[in-house]
Amino acid sequence: MCCRKLRKLRDYNIDDDLIERLEEILPEIPTKRVSPILIAKKLNIDKRKAIDLCVALEKLGLAKIRYEITCPECASDVLVLDDLKDIPTDKIQCDVCGTWFIPTEDDIWIVCDFFFERKKERRIFQKKRSTAKPERITLKDAFGSISFKNNINHELFKIDREELREMLIKVEEAKTNQEKKETLEALTEYLFTSIFGITSSGRNIRTKTAEIDVLLKLKSPILTFHPLFKEIGTHIMIECKNWNKNVGAKTIRNFASLLESYKVKFGCFLVKKHITEEAWQTILNIFKQRDLIIVVLTLRDIENIINGANLIDILEEKYEHIKFEEPVSKLNYVSKRYKKRAK
Image (cartoon, rainbow, N blue to C red; front, side, top):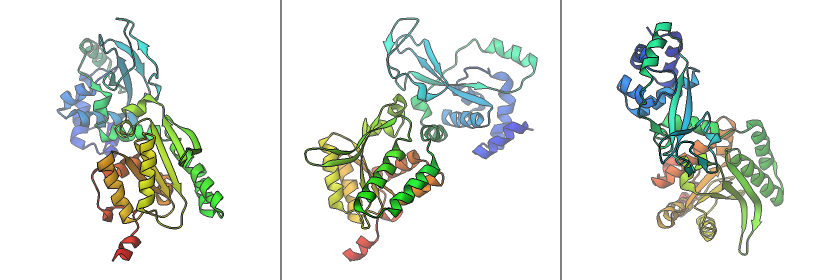
């Protein structure tokens, strides 16, 4: 029979058979700096399932996931981090070989400390076993686990949802064109800068030919390792349309030209209503032909975030809509009116 705390793993989709096998192998594994690879071998499961298990144990307070930075030259341990947000932004030096380097996702390894209660004789047994250094999993490998990535998304996106609600009310109650513009831009800037490592480069940035509503910069190393943000690049450009009409294809094309002129790969439209079906097809064509990503957020998405949704999850989902050319019928931000008029 599983111990009481381990039974709670069921809440994280860990089945009873795996929980029982975990309880059986506990005396055979160390308590410090354990690679999920070791767990995978002991339980005869794949490494992603082992990472999922470690994430679930951490949520229950039975484990702590840590991150070891190793030297790319001699493989010596250089730093151990409790939080990916603490990844150094500058070069660090290996004390063993003297190499200076900036950590990559291949230099950062996932390890776990476990907090299980054990009998004294079991601890003695484990000390003898802990001398061998097991295989390890890189940060790049770990992001292959959905539960690990979702856990990181949760840590990266922290927002005051009540403040966001108040800002949304101001957007909806805005009367003049200036109020509509300013309230939506303020909301957008607050929303995106609530992602750790994203800062605002300014609002209403005037260029020779156009105006950038909101320009954001990605500054934290963790964002260069995250599967979504490493495809985005260093900047995000945002266009806000607090219109009572749907955004059309021409507006999308103009925005794409602005992105291309400043070599920004990722843009976002935050719209009050929807976009037309033709605008959606334009977004797909722009991605295929020019490798530019343009996602669309609506006020409904903002309401979902207020109710607990994660902005990073939403951006990932919308990017996948573009990447895999989802049909219009699956989207909730494409207006059906355009289709009716076209008939």
